[in-house]
Image (cartoon, helix red, strand yellow):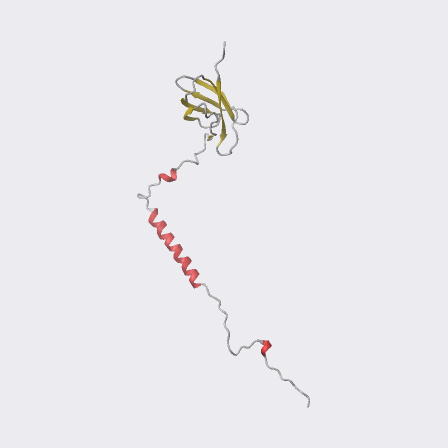
Length: 160
């Protein structure tokens, strides 16, 4: 009785804020053909062993659950050529996603701040230009009647 070959897919689960590994997280892969799970080790590394004689990619969903963290679900395609999976960064239950692009969702057209920002920028540049132009310049001034000390006249007394 021969055993079918298995492919090992590895990845790592880490805390997004602290960049520390998360041990004991449950990592599941679910597809139409297979449903498996494993747990991360002390370094946050997991290994999914999939028995496969098929060389085609396997489409499914990766689910990560860890105590104190938000659940993570991600559609994934497992390929025999790519067995190293990317790091998954989990957020704490009470943390907000710092990678969210909520600042991109700011509606510039309906905001009253844009004219204020433009006027403030123009005012700042105007003040900087005025300060630079008003700065006193020190040019050396020479007067003809101020001769240097070493050119002062002296009398030479000669005994006759």
